[in-house]
Length: 88
Image 1 (cartoon, rainbow, N blue to C red):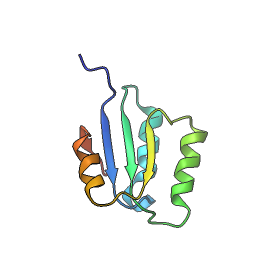
Image 2 (cartoon, rainbow, N blue to C red):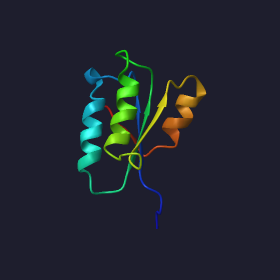
Image 3 (tube, rainbow, N blue to C red):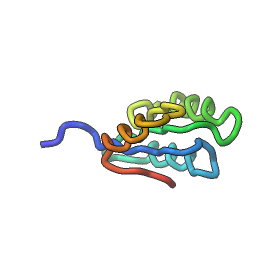
């Protein structure tokens, strides 16, 4: 039996255009256990900090993890260790 939460990856520039704010909304509503790792740079100045602040404010640290920029083989490793890729 699987004991770990399913792990998904968002890989791209963090910003509203990419729907990162929608992932936060989904995380707040979700009942099933899962984790989304947000990896990438900022599309909008200050958006990464806003994302971290919202995760803290809404107590979503058990669902969302912000890595920031990931390059080279680290991208491959990150995706290989995930059950899926999300891009809202």
